[in-house]
Length: 133
Image (cartoon, rainbow, N blue to C red; front, side, top):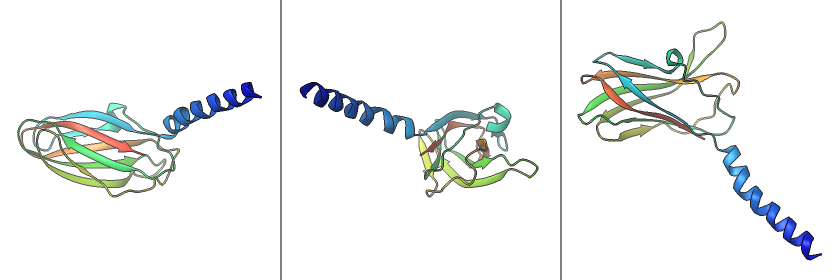
């Protein structure tokens, strides 16, 4: 009987570690935008994410050492229709300044999702885009 109890305990502990790791879906990528009006398009860069049906938050940050302003969108691909935008952010700052969307639920979990970043002020920008679920 002790063996069964130890085996059950070991299985339970393993599931506590494995299940949350499998369910978590964090996607991130760094971007570089050249010049004012420059664009980084995750779709064109081949950076597509598949989101699950759980609540998500989109975050964009600026890691440039001088103040920049960016606009960032999280979009998803729609077959036969223009791509759709799920979240839109504006970020002004430097050295890790970020902004996050309100929580949302992905509309299409089979579609590819991607970030779209435009530098609206400053001579280009660098940073990160993240979707946390």
